[in-house]
Image (cartoon, rainbow, N blue to C red; front, top):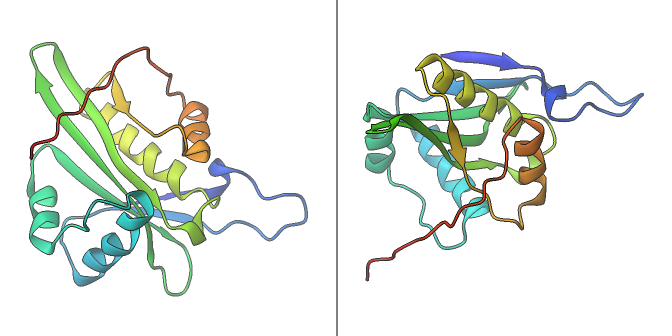
Length: 167
């Protein structure tokens, strides 16, 4: 699946500026060397402690019935992958739920609408599956990402998020 989004949805260029490039969103169905390399380049920009996933780990995500791995590209001659997002849809006793995880856009491509296009594609996929509520979390230090999520209609929730670490 490939969808195109107008990059101006992530912030229109100022008057007189060159038009922003189009953003192309793809659902990963085949884990190629390009995908492995791009994710390995992007994950350190998201987390300094998480290792980049292996090809087998990415394949497990792509073949999982509840997971969708999206990538973004800027419409340019070389069209490299510049962003990624994982959508997880799962059923629990209270209904069908979804969570957006590991959203990252390459520092060099930030501000071009890639993050907004990735999130919009995930919201569309979740909505088409019948999900009513989609959750995501973001560290407060990621100010631009948090502004984006609020602009896109996400609401902060009063909750306690807990993490347990094995080992």
